[in-house]
Length: 478
Image 1 (cartoon, rainbow, N blue to C red):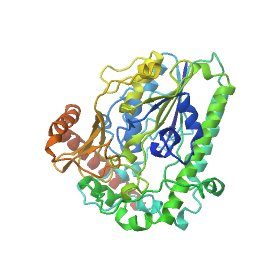
Image 2: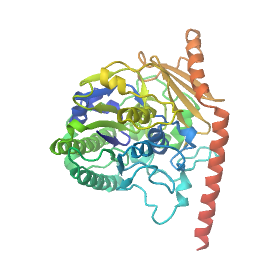
Image 3: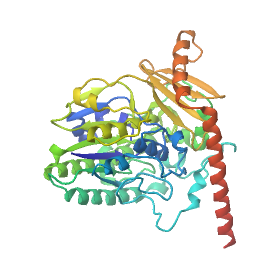
Image 4: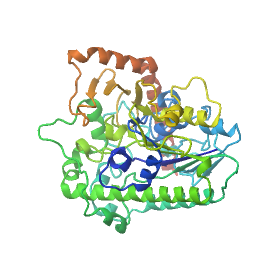
């Protein structure tokens, strides 16, 4: 049997059909969902591309891999699902974005097609610019504001920005070419097809955006009297994202219309490509032999709470789409409410294919659930963020309808997700929740040592910062 793993970047589940979105921009994700299983509460393990994807392919938490930010090298020593499936005769390929950082762009996969980073010219130390220094005061993105807050405000700068659209065109051509060479009975494959859309900056051809110009879209608003910034982590990230400077303009209805029409258009275009891949799987007679998984690496705040980008622990940032489909083998039209996470992907795919798996992975296989329709065993689902914008290790635990946030030495939070889905009310300090807080705090501290994470993250930041400064000095001498 084959495994086709489709991915999208920065896709918030709340704005897709399988998760109840009213705008109807994802009919092909709906095809996957109706023929399989929707995990209603799936979480990434770090709301940022590099650590999220490294965590997913290894089945380990990002800080265990020393992957803290978008400039973190992903060491070759870590076993991935590529290693595991290749060892039992699978052809393991990645088509498109996977955002590995470092010399090793394969990590056990046999082939990289439409590679997202060119390392053929040697390693580029200028990528370490995003090795954010916790010890420096907040002052915005060291790469500049352009791709942060200002990219969420309509301006002439983004009137024509086809780079990501064109990249997805190439990824899609390569995916179609790859799958066109497959037929029933071929050697088994694990193929990631990973698109960039709907990642910012926001641009889509006008004829696609026009589809959404007259639709009612779920534009965010902030209720009167609600305080949306709940602690140091929010303050740090708002500064990093340039939120204070763009918030009023971003939250104007005209701008939100532009932002959401464009985001929906990018999502619609990504979904169209997914549909063409699904059609080709049918045309090639591969349906009976191919399990399909769709996931996003994280979400995007998109103006919710007046915030933007990812990196936060709020639902719009940290939730992932997660859909499974294998008609005739797995249940169809199923919905799972129990929280799961992308760290579960490696053990699930290994369980599905019979591949070996390291014995110390924190994730759990979801295979029994998609086969039987029974909820997976409940346990705290963990997430962490130690990357650009913050100044200390940050952790999150979700269990039994509650979310707990811990930034040691700075803040704690507790949200009742069932009663307060927008996370406006921090319940920390209310005596009735003290035992729950203790349990959730323990779930984090049993898995992570915040002091060790801080020491290792700071050391990595300093080392990479030194290498970057040396490279910049050398360039200046030239």
